[in-house]
Amino acid sequence: MAKIIFCQIGKNRITENFIKTIENHFKKNKVVRIKVLRSACRDRDELKKIKDSLLKKLGRAYSARIIGYVIVLRKLRKNSSK
Image (cartoon, rainbow, N blue to C red; front, side, top):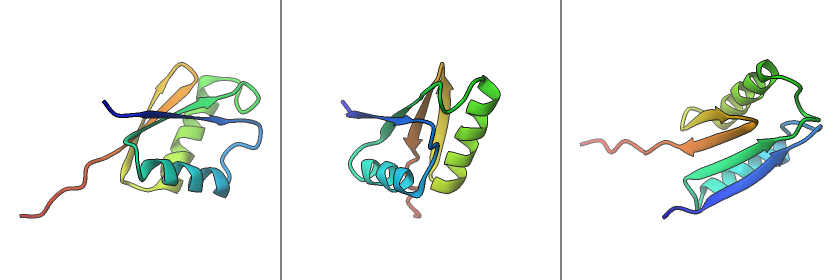
């Protein structure tokens, strides 16, 4: 079973250091769960904006899903050309 890594987004929101940390976690794991603290956003619309900016900074190789105030990031499979 794949190991799931947990991270948190606080009032500093998404920084370059946070992006590097997420990318390092994806070198060994397929799933990263990010808990968004109440100091980072107040409602679901802000949470969606955080998710969109996170995906924009990470690139097209990732997908995200929101469950409560948790963003579940998955790394997509690499397509093998035949």
